[in-house]
Image 1 (spheres, helix red, strand yellow):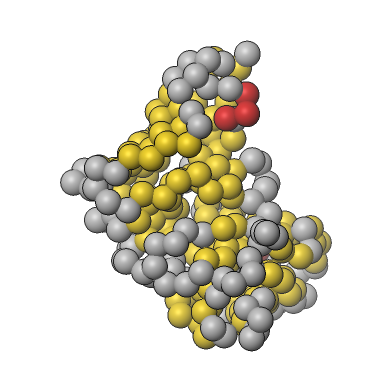
Image 2 (cartoon, rainbow over the protein chains, first blue to last red; image 1 turned 30 degrees about the vertical axis):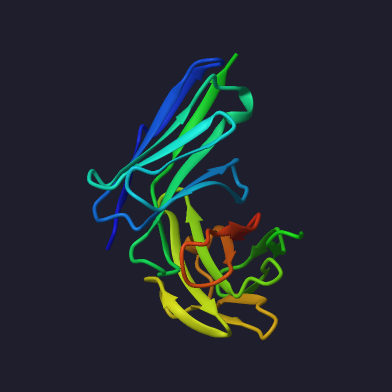
Length: 112
Length: 113
């Protein structure tokens, strides 16, 4: 079965700084999703990447998919307190298979 | 447009009891998936339903079951609760097969005492 490894596990960043979170898959990525979760709450959809080399942005968050490396990265520019939370990557293990495998998450803390 | 609604938000049950959780997907979405989230195991897939049929199932014991109704609303049931079943249970809905993206509900926090 597919495994997703996220790094780092936790991150403490000063407000205004940039940061990057990585998600590496043990298998070929068919669809890669990024979600954000506030503690104990549901997942908020950020972005979905489907093709190698694809890059998407939403506000100050950019995600890229490197299909050859079986890896995705999430980059936040000029971090704000509202960016704090747990970031999770999820992947379909086969195209159209409605079953996501999730990484262990990256806990992001923003300090003023 | 209403999001994914999960009820109840919080639940406390005793070992050995059974529990039923409910999930109402986004209108028009036909696929509902269930996930269990615990500090130790993270987010794990339970099962997925599409048009009242279970299409995928994760590696959970038979005590975990679910169903989907004709209006796409889904329920999951856990029988003979164990302490280890304490978790946040999340459901997600999507239009159907393919990379459409999944919208998650706020979850049901189940505590087994």
